[in-house]
Length: 243
Image (cartoon, rainbow, N blue to C red; front, side, top):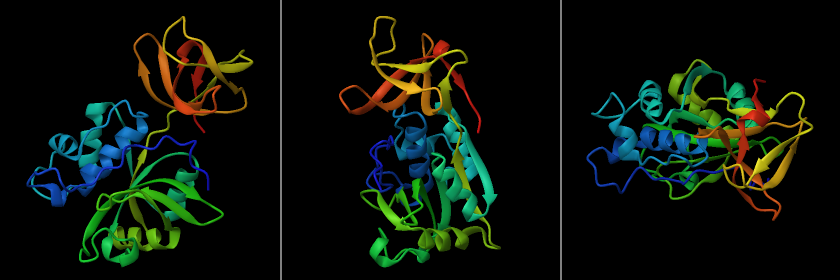
């Protein structure tokens, strides 16, 4: 599955920051990657920076801690106790998910620490329906990877039980061309003299990261040189949408 069209945040490990809480910082690490993902790289907080904004400063953290911390970077995380298929649907729709689970359900070949069998937090970005695999980041690993959906289903079920899982899903941030527009112009830079380097048909939507000063949305899109990069849309050209 080609995922080059997705903005992917910097992958972080929870270990190696030389803080007393490194071993408990799986969720601050996942939360930081979600903030990076949601803002299209405008903010890239480290695990210790995220942890400093969480109410719990002692040990393991929960989704309420993630919600509180993300607010510092103007990111809204929505906590859900739901079924796994609902999470797969949100991944298909372009919404990253933090998922809590039981790490003993992760096979050694996919694990960043086979000796660890406790509660854990991981972040996932994309679901490939044909392969039935999920692409995500484990704070105990040095890189992102694909996981069989069946593995993550078991991992997630080990947290909440009773057929439910707990996830923190990214807020919907999507725009399309404003009413009356024949397309959505996308600019290289957020200023009036910048050139249009791409256009989006009126029938399509695109995810935006943040709103900049001067009335612009940041987006991740391919330009005239066939390169994906951070580009900009005038707020007056667009409308935010729900779906």
